[in-house]
Image (tube, rainbow, N blue to C red; front, side, top):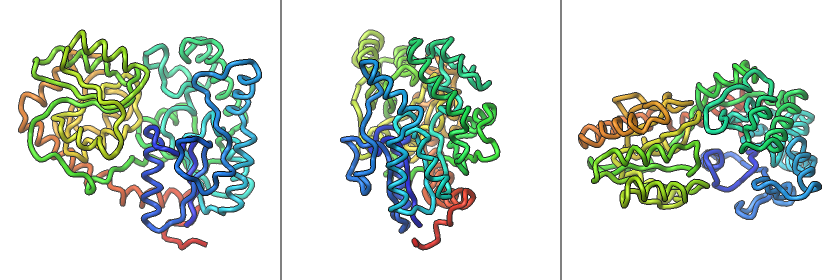
Length: 415
């Protein structure tokens, strides 16, 4: 079967891209022909249809000058170059199904028009809340906010949700309002949500609840060497940004014994501030390792007694939780978004209120004070990963959703 995977970035950048590349590898191993379409970017691996990728555009920071900004906004709303590019690709590749991921801003939903005109089935995995929230995250100045679930994106302007900027917030609200008004995503046959929470919020926003299906992410636990003995420190892996709550974790570490240490993997805009906070609140006990690839992260996870995911926003279904489970490491999370769906409290981790370093410290202590109990929780976590989040199950269910959208089943030979 021919499958066209579409995402604005085609290199391993964040959770959406990691999922995309892992699915591509899974489908190619199964013997299917897979091609990709996205924005031209110097970090992309070599692409079969390189000549047709729309040019690179940088939107963070915002382009300077009226002309450049006007062009950027026009592309966000309706990219003619992306539409021409994908039209050329589908004419050449002739996909049986197109699987969309994050196409906002850099590609735009203009790419759906040629697919609809050619009758190509489309499936879209939602990795965030963009279709219901102009700023993706359901956050207003650092606090959870779901005002735009009523479909009135003016809330984003009134609250200046995008970095406190009236102009940036207006642009994003305008983009969302136009797309909603013209039914830009109506051509998608099946929407996939990795968490029940995201699916529920999309339903509340009226985003095609009849086409929304929950399909968890996956992890290949059999390919991961698990933790072999009790003990270890704390670990965090993810973007170092405010919504991830790393500062809450550092404050929790400050409340724990002097022998408790924290390893932090990741990069982001808050790194310098977090390093300063760690030096002040838990001197010498927090190590920042920077970005760690798939080849290095498992070793860091295995060295930990527990992974903490202290997010203060509605996480969807972060891959790092499944990766920790596969390594045999329990997870302590906040109670927001799809996180509570992953953890069975007392069995393979614990769930605590967000923004509460005292509660987080208590939960971490519960795991750390009894290494054998923590190790047993990690074993239960690995058993869950091997049973409920396998690549084989994921591919089978994805095949069913492709078929539901109108594509051929994956067992069909390429044309």
